[in-house]
Length: 93
Image (cartoon, rainbow, N blue to C red; front, side):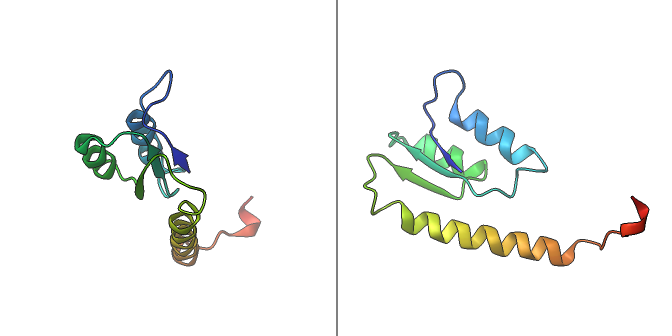
């Protein structure tokens, strides 16, 4: 997920906080794409669990590399979760 810090109605850090607090969303990789070069924003983003922090403007050629890495990372995490999850009894529906 690409997320900006400077959103019109809610702060991007608050969105990130809610994503990482949600059991169904917390494993989704989040890339903060923002114009902020403030060290505090960078630190707060990583403390809240962001996977990468990219300062705009980002050229198109710069974005795919971190995105590919996160997609790979997300797939690995999802596969690990699936392998470790207990098997559901299909007859219990």
